[in-house]
Image (cartoon, rainbow, N blue to C red; front, top):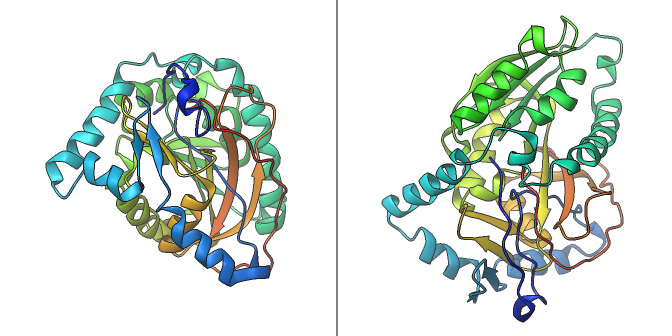
Length: 323
């Protein structure tokens, strides 16, 4: 799935610039030096206000979700229906899924590859000499952009999960053996037309579950339930990689494609609820200035022995890119 562009309003510039593509992001690990302070910060993060794409202010996330999906299952069903419906009207091309920012493909892939190489060297060193059969799940795979340009070069098998059928069919065609240059030992295996909120992976199948520019379409409850279910799909020592847009504070709701861009602290609270820990994080570099900041997280189900931290520049919200 992906995202569109909206006009920017000076009246709400202090909180965000409107999104212009898909909802995804990443953030920094917990700072254990002051755990009590961090617990307080994450506890209040979801109480911070936010805005929607029409400039309306919300007191907190609870107020926003109560209005958007409420307690009625039919309202939540409509939230997801409209989200998929938006992407069903988007062209199945790199420029389409990146919201008219097709040129961000190269820096995006370069940033992801550097991050992935570090993770593979540290977590799966036996894969370097082909002693480990690596399998990855590409969540919100869209047209297979990330799989074709990155994942299939490093993993022996890639499964693609995408709820928009014409995106997935484009990916299937693009990744057919006769249409890409990967070796016989690297292949796209399964093409799954299932939304994240309804998906449960095969137990113990994946070394990495890659989630890029799609988690913003899930409500908070479904975010937590997805990761809790998806944990069973990881092999021992496996990781989640989440790459997403990040709001400077609170959240930004896009009412057209039904997605939310969350702040760093908002994500930390959700990760805590999921029982996930940040193993490593890194800022994405080289994207246009007008876009949201983007970060990558490597998440583990086990408490890391050492939390790796990278410095992050605080910047205002930018229109975001989705995949």
